[in-house]
Image 1: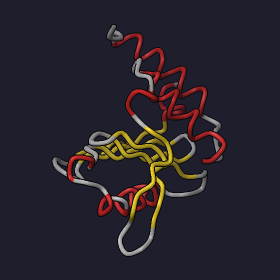
Image 2 (image 1 turned 120 degrees about the horizontal axis):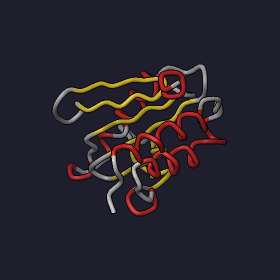
Image 3 (image 1 turned 90 degrees about the horizontal axis):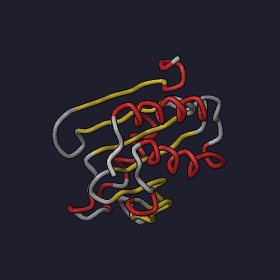
Image 4 (image 1 turned 90 degrees about the vertical axis):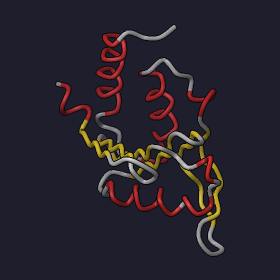
Length: 136
């Protein structure tokens, strides 16, 4: 059953308050994304995986923090880091992905600041917000 706009909004506010003080990437990352998907009534386990291994340019390998093939690639950073670092790291994974796996969206998160970009593949959209502070 699809959630109403009001229900999604209520869940988003709850989510924002829950994570407003999160500061450590490794300690909170998986809970953050499970709860993020829950805002929209989606079970993360049905659509996305954590720590997806990927080959980067050259011989380097990496792990995508959260990967929903063809839809979303997410990178989480510790407080004090810049969202640009998350986006740069996400783009470094693209050469190791098959065409049909390339995400439409990149989500970067740094301790209460969430940024979503569309445009690495097509279109051009950039949204950035401080969830807990902007919702009140």
